Image (cartoon, rainbow, N blue to C red; front, top):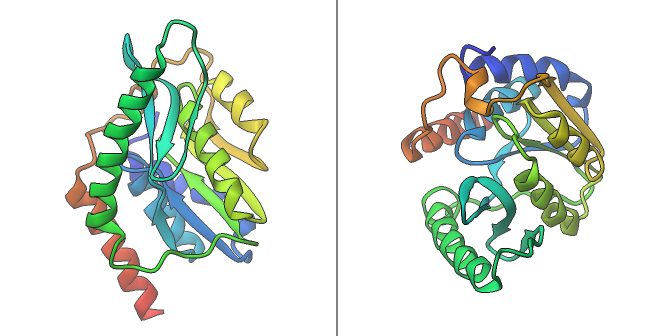
Length: 210
């Protein structure tokens, strides 16, 4: 069990040191992945950006991801019992929220180019892995040299799934019984937009100082 996302980030950074000399970038899945990514990016000396994807939840269980959407693309694992109009409606809702996040956190910055770089994608955990799976599909279009998924805790099924699409998957804890990501953190409060901005500002200050 991790104390909080910061401790998880410190432990994860130790496992990612081999990429320190690569031309790389850390991409954080908001909002829970941001504190973890902040620590990793700081330790590796990499820039960090938000990756704007959000999961498309199952209509009967919103926590269960059937896919994910970005501002420009989406990826869905088709289910016979889920109508297409539900997916279309959810994608529209998600994109509206992502546009708001883009306006708040990213619009004033120039996005880093991913082509030819080691891209480390970080979240605070993965239950099904479907959100990260679709994230990798979206990222491949930017032609990175390598995509590394780095997460503190994940189910075995998520690890198996992600290992098929990423170049490397780094996971600290793969419990025999998976009760949900939050069960493996002593402190797992929801990360606010204000906290996201704080972490991004801290890294920008370090970047300017460097």
